[in-house]
Image (tube, rainbow, N blue to C red; front, top):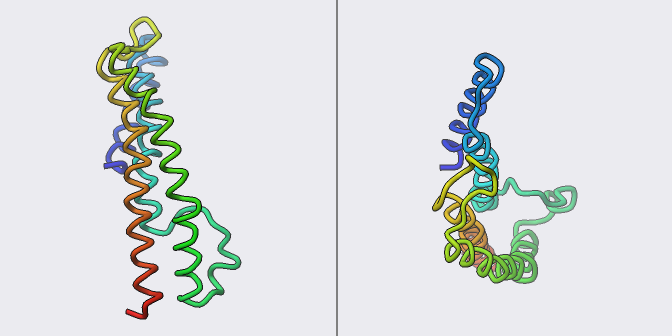
Length: 150
């Protein structure tokens, strides 16, 4: 989904540039949508990045470790760092998202994104920590499997 959204974002950006420089026209809501799509790509791509083991870490030490030691590092990292951060992000985003829905929030800009787009997009703030936490649990279970020798 994030890959397709990236393609849509590139096409919309191209359209914005053509409209602005070729036709001297533009729509604020289209420009805002590019910014929001960019944010959604990063938020939705976080769990996939963790699953594909493409996230940032100190590979200088990690790549030289045995499989069991890497499993320990992954398990401890999930328990001590990843899950608490996901819980923190979800907990602190909840009121922000629910207020957006209850206020029927729309863009601050005249001609910007209307309701319900802004609350829908802010809801991704809850989806990201949930999906990353689920992927972290999967990584922890995989690590436990490795540590048990299966």
